[in-house]
Image (cartoon, rainbow, N blue to C red; front, side, top):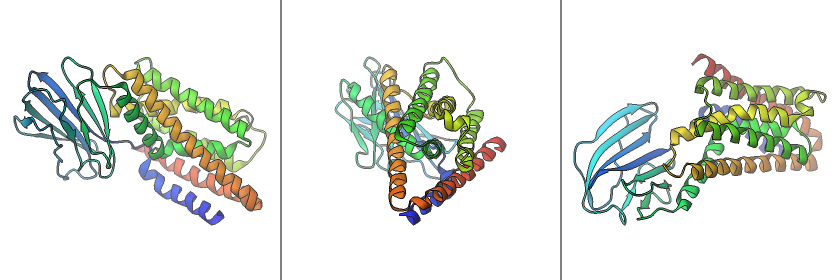
Length: 323
């Protein structure tokens, strides 16, 4: 168990920098212009600018009415093409099997006189059926899954949460600190989404990295009588405000369905919390096992974890300050 735990920490130290706060799902948007004229636009995440542009599947009663426009963006290819559809697209399907092999895709259908539809495509379900009247459940399910995915792939947020759990002792203290962190990032996430607040992404990302380094130092020092250890919920709340700006940036990149912004915001946030609670439970379980079967090694294991987290956070901090 101890060896497995240490191996996990080393994996975090080496792999996390490549995955910090990454959520770049593919996206498709089918927008009605007038009558049978539609615009299909999509974003394809890429690692190389010379990758081929994948063309999505379109409803059977639609055809391409022009050439596909291809444009290179940051870490993505953007495609646009005009469609001409005979009759309504409801009852048809749209998807991108080749885009969801290594990740998910978000689809938005925007008719002129009906509510926007939102779907989340996965490798298991790479095609979505277009309905006449969308349900709010579609939005809840799609954005909840995206929230879970974001927190589980956003290693900077995860390392902060892991360091927070390692810092405090006792289940009640963990609950209070995690709750404060949740409330704080929910406040800023909502404020940014509705246009009441905003900060540039670069200083926000640097502050998030700094929060990880700060907690890692506190864990490694092991000094019992510090403000952070006496009031961990206060520190979690303060830094949680900045993490909320990071979540808002990811949600802005994904996009929100018109007319369903509250549902999308709440479900995304609930997804983030579900993933966060899963990670907290795993860390608590590992600590409990160590305390039961190898209690003498726990201080060394926590200190090693703090160094691994601190080194990773320092790497991010330097990278985000100089890039």
